[in-house]
Image 1 (cartoon, rainbow, N blue to C red):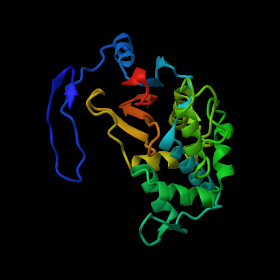
Image 2 (image 1 turned 120 degrees about the vertical axis):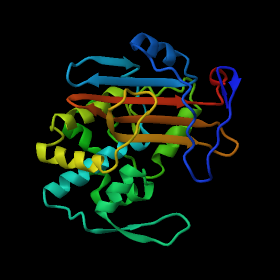
Image 3 (image 1 turned 30 degrees about the vertical axis):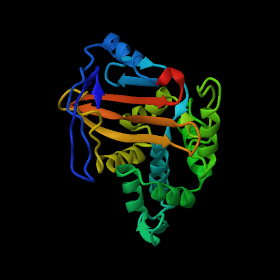
Image 4 (image 1 turned 180 degrees about the vertical axis):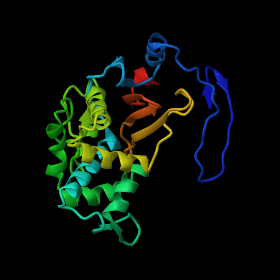
Length: 279
């Protein structure tokens, strides 16, 4: 791979995660962070808030973008809420249909874990079907979060059509809250509510936190100060269609904590690699 005009090599075993050696300078302040962001070949947006001091840093924080698998946090919340109400038994079995494999029976508890820990799409689909898409899509409004699509988790096939239209649009910007789209500020609000134990209720908040803590995420290990633990959910889409233009999205929403310090954040990047300005 080429970095700053110089070619480098690294390797890993088949099936293992490839980590590029640390060659990236960590931003010393928000000004330097903005300089880094300006060099990004795609569209980028982020919002971060220190929940102790209310200090914020942001870029395109209110620009809607595709949230991809980050929206699975709302499926998790609906599962926990229904369980807390006694309307749902997490030991209930769901049929999980994996492409090219025989169907399996998983408990809802297992499906929830793999939805967050491994971003399992089949588990998410089975949970959404069991809970009801309408119930999940009503969650942002129930939380009082603005800046998220009314159809934050659309049924299968809807996002495909949305991305195709965006790829062939003139500006590529999502100037409205399309299905499965939202803003960095809005997504961050979820984890601020979680930290404040206002995600529906203190009891629900604590149970949601327990689910996230079962699958801690090492978000940007080379770009955060040592000692911080991170929970949250990532999202990515590599939308490659035969003989069509391409699209790539990657993002993360979460909560980083160290001692009594808590920082809620969301960052996303969208890239249309066949655009002349992105090459």
